[in-house]
Amino acid sequence: MLELVAGSLRCEVVPELGGCVAGLWREGVPVLRATPSAELQSARASGCYPLVPFSNRIGHATLHWEGTDHPLVRNNGDEPHAIHGVGWQRPWTVLEQEGAMAMLAYAHRGDAHWPFAFDCSHTYRLRPDALEMTLALTNQADRPAPAGLGWHPWFPKRARSRISFQAAGRWEMGADKLPTVRKGSRGLDADCAFLDVDHCFDGWDGVAHLRDEALHVRVRSDQTRLVVFTQPTRDHVAIEPVSHVNNAVHLQAAGASAEALGLRILAPGETMLAQMTIEVEPAR
Image (cartoon, rainbow, N blue to C red; front, side):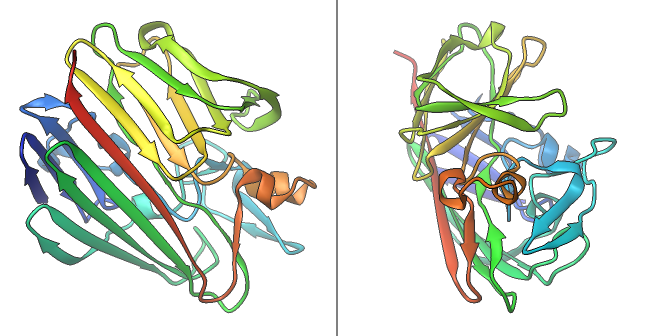
């Protein structure tokens, strides 16, 4: 476990468990879902983990790419899809740690979980009022490959938790948890306690607010898509900046443009970047 401290913020990172964040606290108040690092068995139970080299689901765990079907591993229990990439289930290496900064790396050489080789670095920088994260992924395969990046942070739903952000559209979800159709949407401004949502929003302006009686959290990112997931029975809300729409590789294979979906196609040796900052201040 790596501990980063800056001002009133403290962050714990667990490289061995997908490079996840076990917790982020401001003066002892959880900013992210907090699980003691010694008790973590999977990044899925952590406060935040990286989505590498794709976010959300690839339908029925089959990658349709350049005329070939690549079977993928169903990596989330009984769910029939591949979910959240491979980085969250692999150990990461610590390349550097100094003060309130740490850089991790993961090298993927192609396997049943994802057929294309890539390298990825993940940099954490803790400031007195924010946690900054940067992902960089380079295609190491000998041919063009699809790629995507993002994060899956979980935030506590405390008394009067309210989420708000602006967007241009929302992808509706079918019973199989895959997107069906895009509809216009202005985003969300809602009380989290009664919110039932599991959607990808596009045209996001890059800022999402989460306010409650303890904290005001801003999620900022250079990505233009945001997945939001919670239900009234859950005590946390996921606010996930991502580079592409859910199941983008299948939607692209069905005729949608990669650009409209946010799906990157990286040439051999090409790199893509993504950045997210979680800003924290006391409630006013």
